[in-house]
Amino acid sequence: MALQGKELREAIKNTLETMKTGTFAVNNPSKIDTNFEEQIRDRLMTGFENWNKGYDVWEEWCNTLYEPDAYYNVHGKRMTLTEYKASMKQIMAAVDIQMGDFENIIIRDDWCSIRYSITTRNLQTGEISNAQTMEFVHFKDNGGDIGARVIEGWAQ
Image 1 (tube, helix red, strand yellow):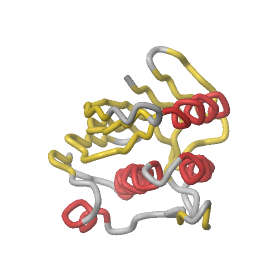
Image 2 (cartoon, helix red, strand yellow; image 1 turned 120 degrees about the vertical axis):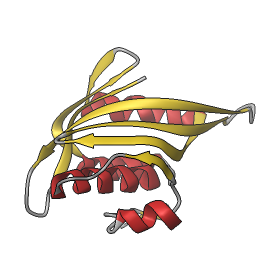
Image 3 (cartoon, helix red, strand yellow; image 1 turned 30 degrees about the vertical axis):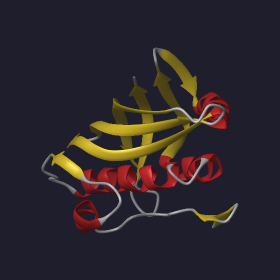
């Protein structure tokens, strides 16, 4: 699917190779024990790539990444998926946020914890800053073509 000249990445397969040669390094990955845990890792890698293509691509990706009734908690505020998308649209209109490398990816059963770098650029001033952030995410295994999708997430 093309959105404003940018291609939505449906899924990254073989993330072990992507982790070595792709856009995002994973410095301290946990051992993946199950197919479902592998699906979660695939969602993370694909999600970061889609985020970095801009809001419209990320919003389209949300239809695959999140359960329709998912919640996301950001800085202590619990939001529905619709509220989260609206919040991100407002933020991304003012600030370009680019996801960087994963410092840690820990996946166990249907939970993951990720710590990663971000670079932000204020679209008015051009000011650039770098930071690390952390998220905890709970996934649901839908099986079949749908696979792993986010039920609820928490970000700082």
